[in-house]
Amino acid sequence: MGPFNKFHPVIAGLKETNMSNRVYIFDTTLRDGEQVPGCQLNTIEKIEVARQLEKLGVDVIEAGFPVSSPGDFNSVVEISKAVSNPTICALTRAVKKDIEVAADALQFAKRGRIHTGIGTSPYHIFNKLNSNPDAIIERAVEAVKYAKKFVEDVEFYAEDAGRSDNEYLARVIEAVIKAGATVVNIPDTTGYCLPSEYGEKIAYLVNHVPNIDKAIISTHCHNDLGMATANSLSGIMNGARQVEVTMNGIGERAGNTALEEVVMALRCHKDLEFDTGIDSKQIMRTSNLVSTLMRMPVQANKAIVGRNAFSHSSGIHQDGVLKNRENYEIIDPVEVGVKESSIVLTARSGRAALKHRMTVLGYQYEPSELDNIYNRFLDLADKKKDITDEDLEILIGSEKQAGKKPLQLVSLQVVSGKSTIPTATVQVSFNGDIFTETAAGNGPIDAAFTAVKALVKRRVRLEEFLIQAITRGSDDLGKVHVKIEHKGQLYYGFAAHTDIVTASVEAFLDALSKIE
Image 1 (cartoon, rainbow, N blue to C red):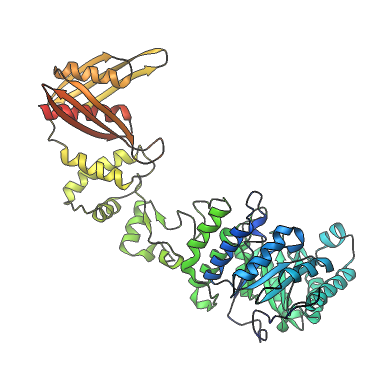
Image 2: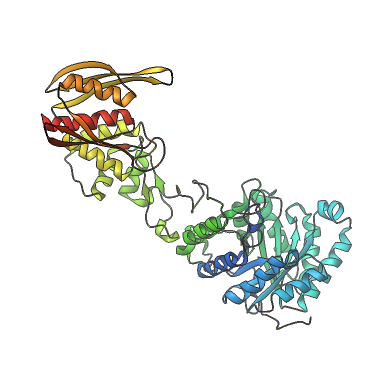
């Protein structure tokens, strides 16, 4: 296997200075991200993700570790054929066989990069590799020189750089750049560094590696202590101009730096004048695709892409957002591909949020009318986690009917169980007078219906009884439809409530009221 066409680095002619404001996005969702147990993708799925990453605008796609398996090798080959704009990168160890296999896998890439490297911390040098510092530098240089025979664009990673001695790390980086490395990756492999510590490490390399201007410094931060994004941003602020990320922050253990967090943090802080070239409106689409294909749900409170990222349930926040989005949102949801902010109606919501949602549904009410609906809304919201549009429609319909029914339920108490005879005590208002009745039945609903029939003294026959859940979950409203017959006429009743027995009795009374 001989060397194939040599590719130019992702930045033509390399950068003139580490202080360029262009930050290059190196996406490793398909390599480091895919190492999450249970999240492996087949080649077709990887191609689908790669094409979406191309639409997103990433600069580099790390497509796999070709020597690790035939599947990974084939994925790198097929992704190289499927996408045109991003550089396609293949990972290797500082081993000749790894590099040869990676080069073979990249033969169809329009722009190919070999990513090779070795551990540089005392833990890796002495415990993992059973070696010594000078020998590690020799192996690093040899690997870069060998990779350079196959591609022009060679990235070197100093594994566990986060825990490496800065002076020694600078010696390694100087040597591999001299050997031909176009990008030098400084991974915080274990997620150990504090942001200040990691930033100082990058700054040390900028100031102490004589030939650092001949390569791009890259960050690769893990999230073991929850600081991957902060460390990556600190690296950028101190001279790194490539950031290695995954979609949704997936990856080994606690994950990697989240692409969406870095991109939007830089975009929000426009005064820093960093540009990533990412089409941010593709972020949510990419996030959903990765989540679906990898069967790895995104946590609700995940920054940028979590379902609650642009949701507001607090009344104070809702009122502020409705007056001016920027009161509580630093990102316009449209910028990341979300249609709009979500005003979630809960027991903490205020009148402003309720009025807004009702206006969206096409209802307009005077303040006094809104007060009545709001009080009923709070009663319902105390019983449910959140209120849907369907719930509001029912609430509004109930409010319209309030005071018009001659028969209204005042209270209901049922006793039921496996070893208990179902009994119901029903209290009903009939044109303002209160009547109470207790009865037994085959179940709580039958007992309640029997008590109601004893109260109204009407000979009616239940023709139809239908219970229907409105949406999902055990706390949602249940709708009840009843059809009764009285003297040859049919009457229909309807009600909804979180308590299905209460909804059933109210629907029954609704039908009986129409007889009266």
